Length: 353
Ligand SMILES: *Cc1c(COP(=O)(O)O)cnc(C)c1O
Image (cartoon, rainbow, N blue to C red; front, side, top):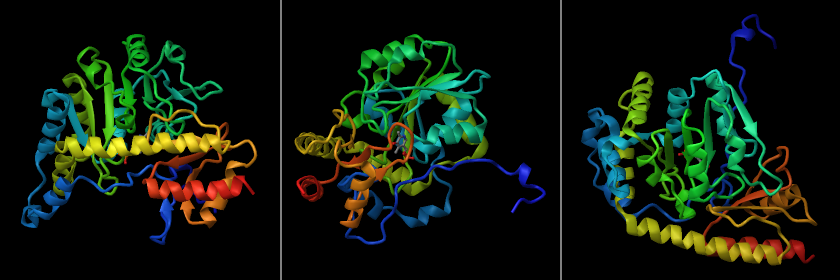
């Protein structure tokens, strides 16, 4: 019902996350979570965590986590920012860097949180269409703008750009801040973190939710020139000081420090991804080579909606978006080999019927 004060209420379309199944038997391939547990070092760190310490405010600036990330990348700690998941980090970045009257630019097919923030923060934006193959052409971004945000690899398309392309994008936008959202970069082997030493207008965001298997906590970082990091700190400290809780800092630090486990689990996921891609193509699916921990597939003889429902009835959840241009595609997270074999078995049955 229309209330007298309705016109003063926020008008917003919230982000819709992948469904959380009630039963533990469901194979959940709909939120790009990691099928492997976090590092054993995370288990140890949480077990050793002294709850007495929770009476105190957490370490200011999430200092241990920032230091671990700086060490991982060979950067100075002043180049690292940390927050409660990359949604928090990206929100701080949008607030800090996108204050122009000119629109910010991002692809028409991309992470659907960007429009949510633009609306919430009243940031003007313009979407740039990806081509028919879902490729981002960086030349399309050589135009006057108030900022650029681009996931690399892009989601949900799985397509990654090479470092040379990203560098061109940054070079042609020296008067704006360019945010590269590297939520899935650990599965692509391409990270533009080394470019932050060269370009003071680049911000790289990374989440611990995917490649470090900590989606159940909220841990993410941004890497940039210290000048931009100081703005992120200023924004974050203005709306929540002491931003990350002590347990998340502890677990995130342990995850960052275990490089070996991180590389081994990412490697397993990449190997599974390659195998499943090949098999899906044999079954007639059409999908780009994925640079992420998920696949983006369509089939000429079965609609995405039909396959989505069929898999759901058989205990496998994948993601379907009823959105223009991608409403006949499915986004399928790469799980364990065993989970993917069940998926393939069901798809074989459907296709060979
Ligand atoms: C998952 C995801 C994020 C954020 O994840 P958090 O869990 O909030 O850290 C950011 N960007 C993209 C493109 C993602 O897919």
